[in-house]
Image (cartoon, rainbow over all chains, first blue to last red; front, side, top):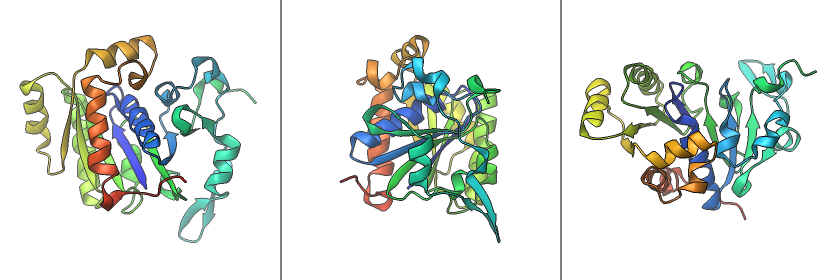
Length: 106
Length: 139
């Protein structure tokens, strides 16, 4: 099941997304939270300590590969989560699409 | 990338980029539900209006979350502008959530019984855990 949270910046999207993810995890679901915002702070609502923010892994650019008719993931979702995911409260796995705090870190 | 994710037994909750760019690129079937979040302000309502139009055109099931609603006037503004044809969930303006935000902590950790958090509890039950949308549970 895929749930998308959308809205203008500053409307409370991230607080609602994180709360929703954690409540789903509490209900027994395996939850993958994706922070797709260019100003990512979903980690905060997911209970990740602020001290870890600077070291949150970014997703690499090569996760999508072209196939006839479109694109697909170059690795399985489980592999991506294992390599780049962050464990947050209630067992939620977080993937961060972009982490400006690490921009330029090579 | 969101469109290419297959759940593999997981519930995927995507906090999309601000605005409606990702929704605009989304095709039918790429999301089981889009929650479009708006507050009673002109700019947020315009983004929500466009996002709702896209989800309707692409047959993506949507729910409007009217956030930070402080009273009847706020809700009236939102419904007057958006004229929603999708379910509307009203999240009240909640000082506890604002304080959590100021402190850099999660509302669910410091104010789990606050009105806004309780609305999200209800939203999960109503739209996600009901049988039509129910996903697999972990063992």
